[in-house]
Image 1 (cartoon, rainbow, N blue to C red):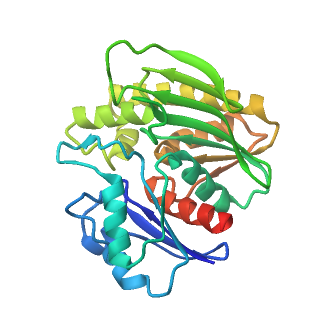
Image 2 (image 1 turned 180 degrees about the vertical axis):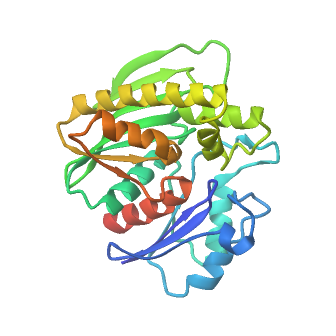
Length: 294
């Protein structure tokens, strides 16, 4: 079985998997020289596909962080389904699986695959993932992997990206998942806001804020806040499982300074950081998930 995962969020990427084994992974900006490339309706031709997808595919999985057509960077209305269809036309197939609701799951699968852990706790944190409820976007997820399946036990979704009047914080149980809906900005969004304040790109420059924390107060305060917040999230995760293996993924997992703090805080845990923690890695998770299903 040969599947192709295609990420059409930022850091657009492709990954081909054959019978559970990764054949290749490429980020599209290496080919079109557009750093952190985000496909748009009128700009979604993948040179990486043209060059490297040469064998017959059984299935294609297209993944993104949202399909609701939000205005991204003030440039264009993203129509993910239209982009997915255009990519299918480029490849010459109609066998396309598109599910915009699995962004965090794709992060989790990618991270667990590289960890090699047979059982583990997986925490995904980013600026925002799939829009699972009207105006609410997933920002933090806790998964338990028992060697067979990925069970999401906790979800925090926030409406800060899609504000509207009349929303209320809510906490409830949904399909064995503890759900927390709030208007609190995710750690990823807070880093993006500070990037904008310093005149930097909100996509790809959050690591510079981490570096600036050694020299300026605002970045230092945000580093401290995010460390304390994530330690509490880790404690919450450990209430769901006593597994010692812990995997971190999502864009926030690229905060290597704070990752070291978690290792010191919980020395009894075996931490693994996803080597493709940004959205590019979701192409890997998408390909692995569909390959396993089929």
